[in-house]
Image (cartoon, rainbow over all chains, first blue to last red; front, side, top):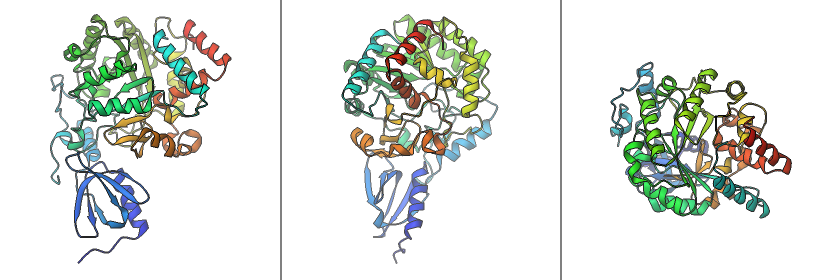
Length: 113
Length: 338
């Protein structure tokens, strides 16, 4: 059974949260399909997603959105956790100049992707 | 002041053309971010917290040149991320130079020395090396030991090979004005063309939220650093902007002055805030509600911002506002007094 459409305030709040979120989200559509991507912009009637390979852009109508789930890891939270853990210590002098450096959130794929 | 005469003349000609054409809003510096990935994770940076696939994405050379042609700003600052991680960065820089743009290639310099062979010295190309103060402060800001030393060696190597080199310094709470004055001496001693300084912007996504400067603190810090500037110091910035940092002048932000293009498109409204993206430069300029930004707008995210990407264009506009201001600016440049 299809999920009910969210109220307009609820949808607006979800879209704004997803726009502010720096990880992947899963958009549930009214036809029952799901789309995973990075929500990089939004307008009064649409949202813009970049897919998981960061190559395909898709514009979805807000009318077809049933729910948005925050399914990807949050890179902001991860970078803050790493920074908190290493407070007072620096990366060693011989860290690779090209990366990957000691921040695993940058280079390891998240479990949801 | 250290901006070369040819560059100053090109910018002055461009600004006068815009004024004569009656254009109220025009870009001065294109902020080009050809990638977001970086080989450092600096404590005050909120630019690089993205999923892996987005960090791996590069703008193509064609995308970068098209953006520059769309916006027509005479100066291009290539930022990021770390631009030297882009596999075609030299082609991007060369393409922009061939189009007559003055290019500042911002870099933390970790890869600069080994990449120098890919570039040709040109009066239109300057490496803008990220240096957040003396050795201890810089390594702390970039969270890695030895980066100051690598950057100094890279600056020397680039200068030896005839490249223009400037430094770009972001200051945070706790900066010591006296140590910064000695740092300016050190940078000029290396032989850089000039220095750029700015308080850091309080990125919401940056890990360290405790050390961003508030406006009054910025004024005090810059005032103590820049009062009685040494004649040997050269800044690659307008005197009015430095006076603004010191609290001697007040401007509101000019967010359209340094438009930003990156993997998502034209960023609204500025280099620091991400309120959405336009597909074209024209759409950015015409469809952004600029009244929502700047200190006077009351936007809380703009209240403490004094970053050069918003206020250097304001300073340039003020410089060209009247013959008197033009004279004042010229005098400050000649005498070095702020």
